[in-house]
Length: 338
Image (cartoon, rainbow, N blue to C red; front, side):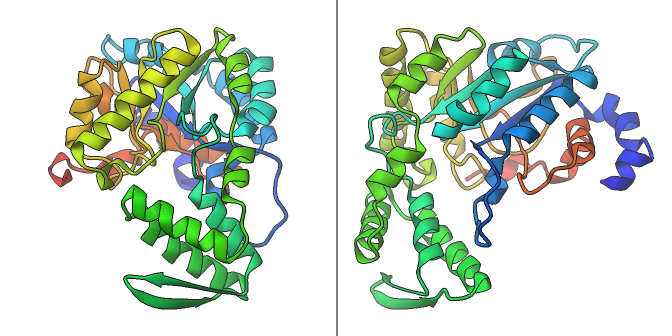
């Protein structure tokens, strides 16, 4: 990527590979943490990086646009300037406390995809509870597939290995089994799952303040933030439709945009793309990396987004990513859909 930047290759190829623009995906925005064990660091950026990035996007002559404008530009002829849309998943509290002051100061639009159980204090941020538990314990025991398993978590390396294994296992469970597993672990090791989930999430007062800003788009991300591919079809459709309905009732406006929870290849299926269209959504965003093409070549109900790795601080790398030159090799073939 350094070579692509300094040689000018990325900017040279951008006309062919850059499409109409890029939707960027972020999650948390907060000050750097000093802990050695940070398994979710890749999904975090700092307010300082957010500020630098927005300044750079303006300097590079990108149009920073809303999701409504993304949908409009995706079906029209290419414009002179490419666009970037800023989106934030998960409804985290620090989007209000750390990101919003930066975004509002710059006067740029952005979208928050909201899982509606979390502002009510009912959502379970199992990935945060698991992180907290592994960070504090030197040994973890639990039952997996009817067998007692034990994980040594004394060293940082052991903690990362245990977290990766347990997070992958939990993510593959059905929602009832996942809820049972994380609640059982939290009871064993005195982790306040409900308090941790509430503390990390925006409440309705935060969201009402955001929704009052015309630069902010509130999108939906189901009710409970499940991996949709782990649900029966009827349950998946209910999660999608109810998330939209709850947000519309809360904000007294149409909710037109949606993000598949987690959003990668294993998180949703082709059927869910059709569901998003059927319930009247203008777009449904994935976490699959690609540019948004012009002239209707991108399916707006499997909208690609580029997730920025928060462990990186290089704006040069971001500019290469925005050019789209590396996405052709990683864009999944449609025949791989389940």
